[in-house]
Image (tube, rainbow, N blue to C red; front, side, top):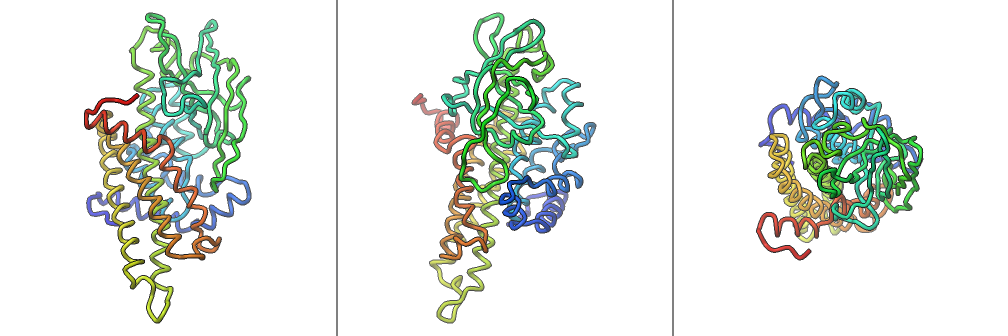
Length: 396
């Protein structure tokens, strides 16, 4: 992969993280999953080296950089076969939201732990009946004295069984208008009424997926991101909760793109290595255009997706939330498509060997589709681009 548009600092970060990833690799991740464990050794070493908190403020133990740097970390770990899915959730989504909108107390309580790897936070937005329509979220919070009571359901929440808390997207009633509007709450894992049930998935990853039930979960006022009276009571900024939500969703899309690009690079590298060495009729199979051209196309698609991801990260770190929203969606779409094609072509290049445990590609067939589906489907991204970018009328 070319890096000529990156700064020397970014290239140095990429090389250092790649070296870390190679010390662990695909075998480490597969063994971890088979054991039903978490990749804690890699997580804590990445934290110790400053990679997990690279995007968090320096005053809270972070690196003071941005999503551009964090996406490099995830991409390179993925390219080594050892991606850390919770990086998308904990430092990228939750860390960003709390860094930008949290109270001083919330920042002190969470950001240092995110940076040194000792604390993690899951993220719950998806609901069974809402899908991609955040306006249909039914998880609601109502006042009970100085506290909040949070009720609702969430699905496909990653890593909640090991996270110290979950950042829940709910809705509160605006005191002035009576309308429901989004708000984000930090829910401790041991909160009364906060239940979880694993979803039986075929994904071969360490992070499990859960359905959450919130049954009148009582939370103090300070559990609301930004504080107890900022926007939830109607006395603060009208769209504060919406701004918080999208402050997390744009990094989520950028980091999902990094996850997909890393996975696609890993698969492509295995296929190229095999095509160079596997000889049939006295010539390596990579000498045949039927093998070489699809691999070259996969490489091109991954390179193009990476460029859009870098653009999205640059816009986000520069404070252009609107521009970053468009670019992040495009990056996630391009990376998801490129990843699926790269994995498919890699498996096809290896033939039967592509389905064996030895080469570590078969499990990626399922995993690669995640970037097409989550956190938002490619069809919804096409809807976004068609009416937000091209100005076409909505169909919904």
